[in-house]
Image (cartoon, rainbow, N blue to C red; front, top):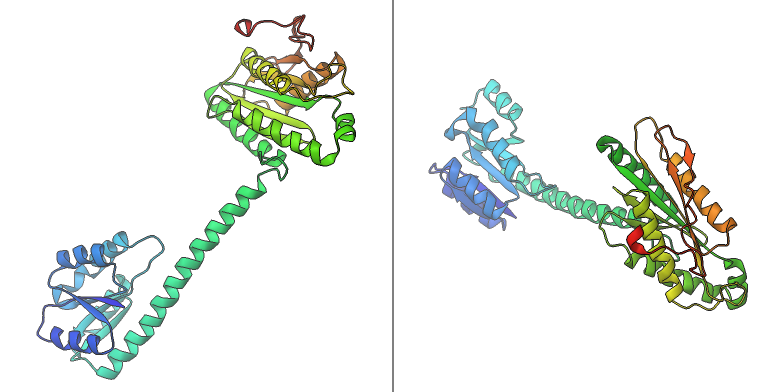
Length: 341
């Protein structure tokens, strides 16, 4: 245990001797500034302040000590005064200004040892609580992180996606920015699951998750597992053409994996994509963007699958399907170039 002793009186040597005898390391300081400098370096467990330095400086000294304390640490400050020299009002004021107790001199060995032993136990318990609280905070942070992830793919789960969507919606509303969303659904996946088995199908979903996550080129873009074989991609500050571009890039990347699928007319595992965007306004809710994206996804699944369909959300909140909404098809006959997006 380390004790910072701010005392320049002759009695200080007696105090140093008594502290050393009970295996406490005293750190002497002969001025307030020296005490504060030593506190920053040593971070002692206890401070003894002689009121001879000026009673009215107690509050300022304690305030400075609190500013120098490490996060979560609390250092008891005891004022030292000659016995009988301190009026009750002065003692009351010192305690109100931040001191935690008083120690009278000449020092009573029994009283000194009793207080030091008590404070040593207190400091040990305080340090234990600081460490325990830090471990608890770390564990809670990790638990929160794990609870936000999908167990199968390691991507953010649907609940976390909805939280991020709400956050990005509010941010976009403040800045009047566009916000885009892409929704993806694996084609004929139930048949694929039956064909290759649950374990292999799960491995494929994990592989697709890594593929999609690695395809994000901007820090703000995020991929999540929406549920089952569905994935969502949130694209802040992105218009409809940008969302279509990302969806088409993912569609092509999936086909390049060459995952054989005998029950698909394409012979490969493919996916249908829906894309939507809107200029976020405070009068709308993020559900409108989600509904538009799911509508576009359903249109993609109803029109041959393995394609990208898009829906525009107008300023009035209405959904508008562009005439050229059927952007791509699995046979690539209707496929536009990336430059056109």
